[in-house]
Amino acid sequence: MEHGPGTGYELPGRHESFWMETTPETSYPPLPGNVETDVAVVGGGITGITAAVLLKQAGYAVTVIEGDRICKGVTGHTTAKVTSLHRLIYANLIDRFGGGQAKQYADANQAAIEMIASFVREYNIPCDFERKPAYTYAESAESRDLVAAEADAARSLGLPATFTDDVPLPGRTYGAVRFADQAQFHPLKYLLRLASLIPGDGSRVFEKTRALEVHDERDRSMVRTERGTVTAKAVVLATHYPFYDGPGFYYARMYPSRSYVLGIRIGEPFPEGMFINAESPAHSWRSQPAEGGELVLVGGMEHRTGENVDTREHYRSLADYARSVYPVRSIDYHWSAQDYITIDGVPYIGRLADGHENVYIATGFRKWGMTNGTAAAMILADMIRGRENPWSGVYAPDRFKPMASIQTFLAHNIEVAEKYIGGAISRPSGDLRDVLPGEGRILMIEGRKTGVFRDREGRVHAVNPTCTHKGCVVAWNSAEETWDCPCHGSRYDAYGKVIHGPAVKGLPPRGG
Image 1 (cartoon, one colour):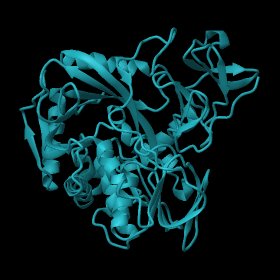
Image 2: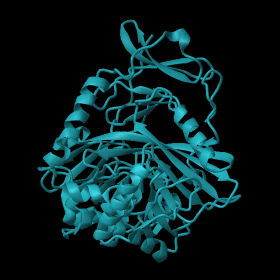
Image 3: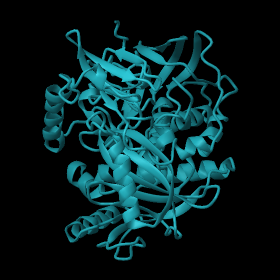
Image 4: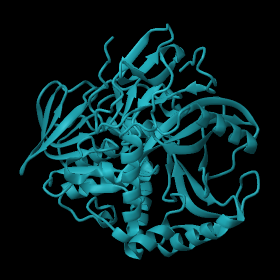
């Protein structure tokens, strides 16, 4: 994406995910009308595609529907670490849930690594799959004890964890928890091959088909889309955030978070491993084979979706940080990602809610979607088949641990009510003359809040800035040129079209 005059800082490299730039676009057809199937899977990312393959292998007819093209959403913007080392989590899980459920989380994510490895072997998928160690490292003496405690906690759960002072990164570190035999890969090369296994024997993939609502009855469910309906015995909502919330109130139990990635070339070989620091702001590192030599992916600078006024500053900060660690020869790519974080840090995977026995969800992966998303597919496939899954307890969507999460729950929802629904983040500022080409702002026009975008030719496009999901006021994202909802993460392009749910309707245009 080019940034024209008046938009300030020029973003480095191509504004595109490396994964999407190096794989062909898919061309599955849209839903042709009303269809019936055994299982409807809504969402074509890692969870939806993996679940569909597992269910087809088990003899089910599966229909996958995707609002855009498969793998172009959250999965297409990952850093693609295939690891059960999720920064610092296991000591906290043991404290909150006890050793038994903490081990379920550990075992699920380790099993997900091996599931991915087995698919790569079985189908001979050329996706740059490599075994690598993963590190969470301390950048201060104060964090060293936290990292050492994490190593002890993870090892007590049977994970391949050690504490080490040998962290092969430049600069001063204070030790790390190291997990052996983890992995990395090219996620789209992997998933596009898996997706090709779905069509046939009654199973299908449909793209450019946005789901609008779900009707769940005792013996069947119906997904209504913009192109027809899909009737099924079971429905999997693998849309990253459940566009159909039902009585689950998921919008009140998690929040959306954005982070940033640069694809850089450095002037020396990158060390063996995948790395993330223990402190804030988070900084993540891994390498990737690429044409022209090794590409290094550096990520981080996370913040709540819709909160920051000039999101381009996060790319600049990330670039400055990368240059402080390595001699950066070039910045070839930049992109951003969005994830959801639950109030207790563990995803929700299972039945949507009481009274919705045929609808299943997977959400809140906390930026670790490669393993949590694969584990979710395994859990949901077992549940649909009527099989007991050994890890489902810790992920159960109906869990509520008052001592563990009530303060976070209350703080989160008070913040939403006070800051976002009323639009405190997106206060009207300036007037129409102040809006430069390539820029968006919330203005007060004729007594109404109005989202205004001026395109490169100087034409003005105005929308109602009230999110069509739950009524929060959207904010302008200068880096991506989108309208982003800070409440639940819905995103719209500069003209109001939905590009990321849970919203299913666009922002209405403002007349005049």
